[in-house]
Length: 107
Image (cartoon, rainbow, N blue to C red):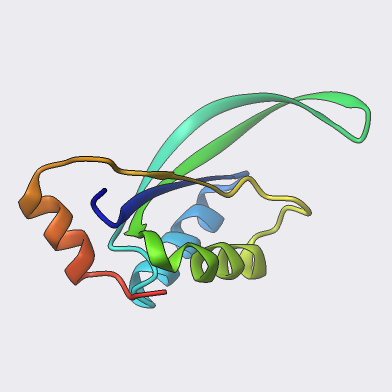
């Protein structure tokens, strides 16, 4: 294990995506946030099938900081129940892994 994880979250508006990304990087909760525009999400919410355009945030973080970034996203997010999921990175380019660790806070 590298001690680094990828966290994903979706948002409904570009302004919110940019604001979240800038805040999380400025606070060193994430070393990097990629914003992937124009995804389409089909999901069940409050007993209805929804079909919405969203943006996907892909964040590289220190695994030990997941609880902090999860709580911060929840605090800033406009959704009642935002998607916030984490995947550990098992292996990667050592220089990149080191960069993420150097540019993100510990948990």
